[in-house]
Image (cartoon, rainbow, N blue to C red):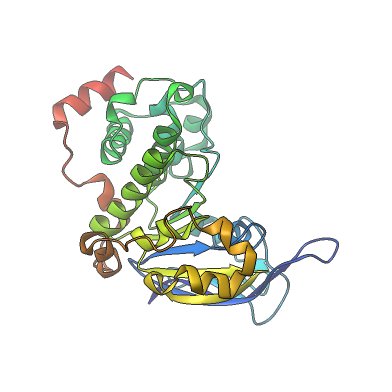
Length: 305
């Protein structure tokens, strides 16, 4: 069963602008896929449709399914859409953290869909929930930042906090919308390595939209390329050479290639193994894997927060 299935997806905005045009593809459970395309190609719009944040054009042929259940059908959100969204973690370029709140509190926001509304409104979280947040932060490598204000973190650290928030949500699918666009190369690699690790070790299905094809070749076995809202390439990332990009995008291909890295080396074997991650592994395992910090240390930190 496909983790994500998209059939006949089109989206037309007011004024007649067609952002997506009859997009169809499947994503297997445990795959890590890159979405690439020049500015305005429809990457962000596609991710928002998969997450159920935007409704498609009305069409009997349109269906978007997550985990085998439709989240959109015939251009309408299904009655199960809200429940399905709890299992979809969306990571945005802007981080979407509240800068004045602690990193721990920002991560705990990921639990709002699974706790009573009154506790969420008052910001009351149990000791066990705080421990889960600490485990998620340890999983992405920033447990020591739990008590710091989110606004004091670097861009890469804030993006990893956003990933931890998706983990504590219990997401089985991660949708990352240009998560490294505003980061320096070192931070970008760290974020991509975190996503690849979650895919490889925990079996999470990951779709990440990228503006540079080099990162797709390094971390994602499969790439889907969009142009003017249409799928123009769907295949092995290693096949998407600079020459192939120029063939597809013409002069616009220059914005997809980092200078000096026109044909960067593909991902090492360990990084590519993500596509073969066991499909049956639950996403919640991300919170249960052994952590580098001792459990006692996490419990102490959680109790102080």
